Amino acid sequence: MTDPTTTHPAVDHQPATPLPTAPPPAPQPPTPRATTAAPAAVDPAAVNPVTVDPGAANPGPPAPVSGSGNLLTDNPELYEARFPDPYGLAARWVEATLRVHGAGPRVLDLGCGTGRDAAHLHAAGRRVVGADLSQAMLTHARRHHPGPTYVTADLRGFDFGPAAFDAITCLDSALLYCHTGEDLDGLLASCRRALAPGGLLVAELRNGAFFLGNTELLDAPTHSSLTWQGVSYTALTTLWLDRAAQLLRRRRVWTADDGSPPITQHSAWRLLFPQELRHLLAGHGFRVRELHDGPGPRSEPAWHEDAPPPRGTADGDRLHLVAEREAD
Image (tube, one colour):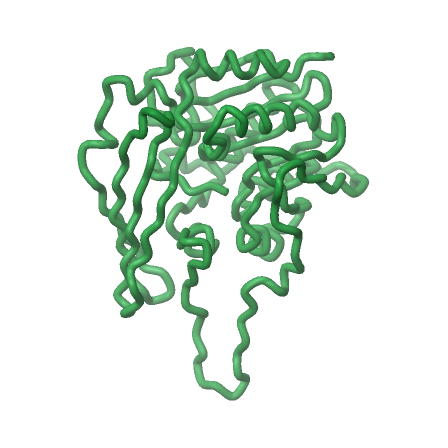
């Protein structure tokens, strides 16, 4: 699931490029066979049901919940309010990347979150499966971003069968929720199995090398705020490095003006260096086609359809990866 620490406002306010006509309906995509423990799929209608008394006056929306300790993961509508993407910048970047590299139509959006990007790729004519561990996110995706097939899967180990996809996307640092070497091996082995020969892994993630001498994200806590459904929320975010574990750790404390108690959320991302990432990919049978710091959907300046080609540098705080699954 995606939960970015910082966002860069979309500087490109152009409408998306015209989309191709969708292909005929495709066969039902394969159901994943989880290779590590993952929650069983549930009926979307049974997740966090809201009961409203028809006789009650102005019942209003349900109050936010945080069953997992992550306010945004547990409340997808709040997540989309906190991280708006009205122009579909991330998905447009993915679609443009897939076109440039000639990717086929079958796409797995790994860590699909609310389903916004998966739905955009579906509208572009691709056959998309969105996978996530958060049942709240999957329920929201099915209701609000229909088109793709949404399934429960753990990115640390999943099995859709061999050669089920032509491309796998993994955005917003979702890849970095693999904290250990074993986690990363499980992810890359699963991606290799799921991709057809020549298929692509397209990822957008934090750049571990950025923190070599750069402390701007670590120097002081940051404050952010938003108002959602009449309630004002304030977040105090602190980042620090856990060098022994090679993790960027975050503590975020949410407070609201509705009298509810504060919610403290802890998150962490693995920090990978560019050469380390190349080595991991090569060990799992991938050839890197692109690895650079932008332009991309979260870089500054942000990517747009007429952006210059990547410079091939790795100085910024984001990395953009395109890797090809080599033949057996």
